[in-house]
Every structure is written in C-alpha cells, then in structure tokens.
Amino acid sequence: MWLGIWIAVSPLVAAEPGYVSARACTPCHSRVAESIAHTGMGRSLHAVGSQPSIEDWERRNTLHHAASKRTFVMSKRGDEFFYLRYQDGPKGERINVVEKRIDYVLGSGNHARSYVHRTPDGRLLGLPVAWYSAKGGYWGMAPGYDRADHADYRREINGNCRFCHTAYPRVEQKEPEAIDCQRCHGPGEAHVAAPSRANIVIDRKIGLCLQCHLQSTSQHEWMTRVEGRGLFSFRPGEALASYARHHDEDNPAFEVNHAGYRLLRSVCFRQSRGSLTCTTCHDPHSRQVTPACSSCHKDSKHGGDCVACHMPKRIAEDAPHVTMTDHLIARRPGRRLPLKPSAPRPVMDSTPAALLNRRGEALYRQGRVGEAILILRQAIAENPDLPEAHINLGAALAARGDRKGAEAAFREAIRIAPEYTAAHRNLKLLEKIVH
Image (cartoon, rainbow, N blue to C red):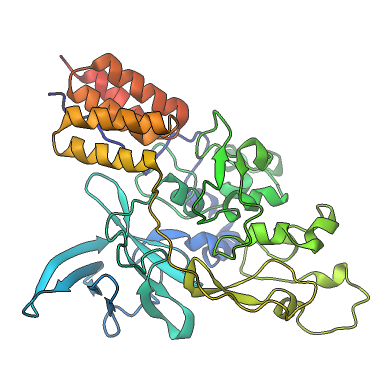
C-alpha cells in the first residue's frame, strides 16, 4: 500500500510567480488599500472575525428549514464561530447533530455573506445558511440551498469559486486572501522592489472586470477556458477572449453575478463603441458610483436619478433574498416588472463526469481502490479535461503500486490545470516513495 498521496482536494495555494502579499502594497498605497478594504473586492473573502461582525450570533441565530426538516444554529464561542445542524427525532430529541467551525466568510456583506469550513485535509466546504443584509439583516438559506435535497455540508468551494473571491495565490501562501491590487494591475513583485508606473498594468478595458462579472449559475456550461490556459493564468492587459470563451450571451436571466451580460446587451453599451465600460460609473478603488449618463444624453429633458428609472433594482433569480441593480439599461423605464425568484438551483457540479469523480473519490476513501479506478476512468472518459479525476486516479493507481500510471495521471492533471497544487505535490511524493 502506497502512503501519503493526496486525492484531489481543493488547494489553497498554487504556483503564481511574481505575486506578493497584499500587505506589501500598504506602505506606499495605504489610502488606496484602505479604500479597497471597504469595497466588495477587499472583503470578497476573509477569515471569520477579521472584519466587523454584522450578523446576529446570539439572539436571532436559529433558522428552521422546513423543506429539509433541518434546524441550524449559528453561534460564537470565545473567538470562534460555529454552525450547528440537527433534526427533530420522533420524541422531540435532537438527532443527526453535526457542528462545523466557520473559518472564512465569502462575500462583502453589502448584500450577503456566506460561510466556509476548512477540513483537516485542506478542503473548503460551503455552509448552507447565509446572512442577508436587507431588512436590517437576517439568516436565510444560502443560494441553491432552499430545497429539500440541498447539499448540506457537502458543497466544495472549488477553483472557480476562488478565482473570483480570492487574490492570485502564491507558492508560500498558507491562507486565502481577498481580491487585491494585483488582480487589476498584475504581479506586484517588480513594482514593490522598484515602484514605477512602468512595471504595473493600467488596464481600463471592460474585459478586466468581466473576468469575474460574466459568471452565471445557468445549468449549462457557461464558460470554457482556452486550451492550455490554467485557472489563474489570466493577466491584466490581455484580451479576455484569449483566456476563456463565454457562452451565456443569449441567456435573459437576471442573476447575482450577471451584470456583465446585462450591460453588454444594452443599446447604450453597443452604441458607445467601447467608450462605455464599468469604470465609466464605478470607481474600483472605492464604493463610489457616479452615473455618467449626461455625457452622452446632453439633450435629455428629464432630470433626477437616471439609474433609478433606467436601471431599476430587481430580485436576483438565483438568490431570492438579494436585490441588485439591473445593468440592462432600459430605453423605456417602467416596462419591466421585478422578476419573481425562480425555483432554487442546485449548486454542486452535477455533470456526469463530476458525479463519477465524486463517487470514485468516495470509493478511494473507503479503501475500495479497484472499484475507484474503474469509476475514475469512466469519469475521464466522460470529460478528459477534469483535473480532479486525473489526480484521484493517480492517487488510486499509486495505492495499487502502479507508479508509472500514477505519474502519468498527475502529469496530465498538471497539463490541464497547471495551478492545481495537489498534482505537483503528488509528483514530489512519488519521488520519495519506495516500492
């Protein structure tokens, strides 16, 4: 039995040369750093307790979810925060009791906050209850969980989640960090060593924002990375199309992170010929929004707030507790009523390959290595570009003593996703393993 090989858990670190800790920017850019800390980007992910608490952990901290017959209690003990989940037994006793420590907060809290548990083996698991800031603040089921068969504590926060909620990871990084200057201005190592405008990127093209604001919770595959591109390989200054292809342009849905699609469909945007971008109205260094409608519509006879009429706030289809600004600029205001929330959508990847991969991983953990290998090969046949399946297959092959097969599987995972640290670690472990 080969020991020590990692299965494909979600890594917190990846080899990203040239990136430094966000703290390195503070000595010279303290005011900007402080401003970003107050934006959604600066609070996109943080350790629980590191930001001021806006939640009620003591009084209104219990939520009963009738659909799944589960009750959740959110609490604080000392400096730690916890989720407790239980169900009512036939005699009123608590059964199926599970408690998870909260390690990270996902989201700024401008609209909502979700919560993340880190397992002993480094995986990040989403937790089923979120805090919503509307109406004075309240607990509710997180997006995708308001259903009888929700993912409970089984939803893994994968690389796609972290791509838009964390800074580019560094080799020495132990904990994830929030979005920082380098996501917009490129690797900061050279700039920290010799500050100059010449060694940072000044990119005002809309693609820089759309790398994250073209996401969708649609059931179909909404984005495909260009062949050979790793998850964290996009760099400020390059065209978004050279990194990924997006397939959701014709989806009329109004979703939490759908603002980019809505803006791109607007007549105002199309007729601006590239002059209308996100930063036309949004200051990326603060929460300040300055509508610039009058720069084009100089002859408008209407005064007041253009945005309130032409970009009304609406309920997001994928998060019925959240009201967002609709960036589809309406020529004739008042003709679109706020959408009613649609049925909750599952949040776990339910493609055949992903389901087979999770089954193979479970079999491997149970010691049923031979069965795991068969299932993982099926997963790869369904989707040859699923790096987790290759890593899990490599781990299973290593457990069977197939060193060459394991090495080939890990190298294939690295070819597909160079940032997947588990594959790099496993290759190094193979070198130390003795037959």
